[in-house]
Amino acid sequence: MGQVRQPKPCLLIVAGFSRHDSALDWARGQLVERFGPVALTSPTYAFHHTSYYHEEMGENLKKVLWAFCNLIAPDALPAVKHVTNALEEELRSQATYPERRPLNLDPGLLSLGKFMLATTKDQQHRVYLRDGIFAEVTLRYRDGAFQPWPWTYADYREPLVLDFLRQAREYYKQRLCE
Image 1 (cartoon, rainbow, N blue to C red):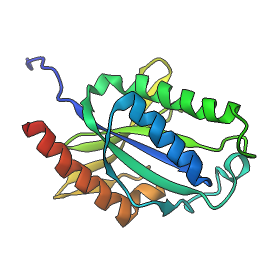
Image 2: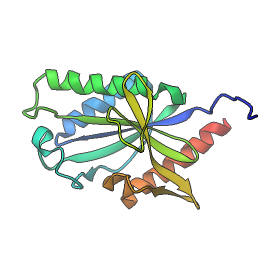
Image 3: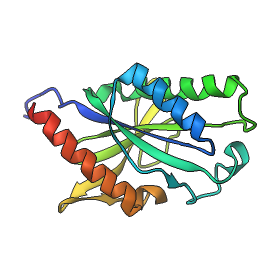
Image 4: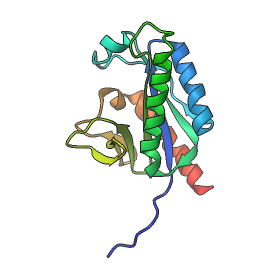
């Protein structure tokens, strides 16, 4: 029989995308207030991989990922997803932007062996956590690199994103040693 152990804390990463730099700046500030300082920020890149969001968010979307200094328990992911959903709704309700959804925030957790995203949508490859939130292992770490699965979103296959997550994993390893 296996020994029950507490899992190691994980590195919180939140991806934000919008057409508006000011919405992304607002999101970063709100996330820092709730989760502490940002340790790493990816380059901002064009989110052109799908037209799925165009109707509610507009075109010419930009995406950025933030890795936070403070490690969190893996079972905190549903609570984080509820916070990011509330932030999206708060910005939407301010009616500052013409889009129905000016901001999308996707939280995830990075551990040594994987990167997983929180979602409210069930699929055959997702596991229910609690409070209406599922988790998807989006990338696995194997042979010295993060590698996609068949269901991995196209932008998470981009070299820029994979390189950022590799850097985040190195940061995370350092934090685990502290």
